[in-house]
Amino acid sequence: MSPFWQIASISAPSPAPAVEPDPELVTPGFLGFAIVVLLVIAVVLLVWDMQRRIRRTRYRAEIDAELDAEEQAGAAVEASDIGDQVTDAEGDDGSGAREDPSRP
Image (cartoon, rainbow, N blue to C red):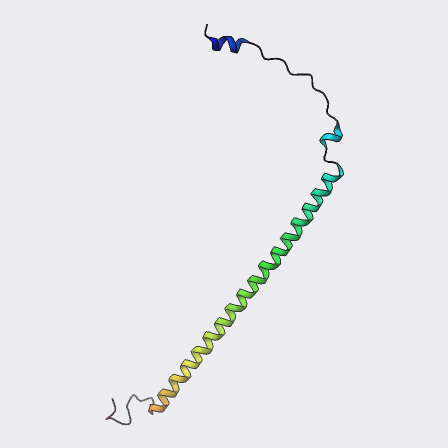
């Protein structure tokens, strides 16, 4: 027989009889409860603050989008006003003919 089988045939020692540990040593007690409560309160406060910051950022983005839209609308109106002034200065009467045929 090989040495492996000899080692495997040796029986393992039986475990020691189970001894009941002292319940005060294995329970978290009041200190553990207080720490868990403090952690829960801290997490709730952090989530509340995060939601407030996200909401504020979203409102700022909406306001920026509205301001950009107003600015673009104002620029479009200004551009059309300038175009009308140039057309009026040239004397365009809407017929497509120019008053001075010598000007290109």
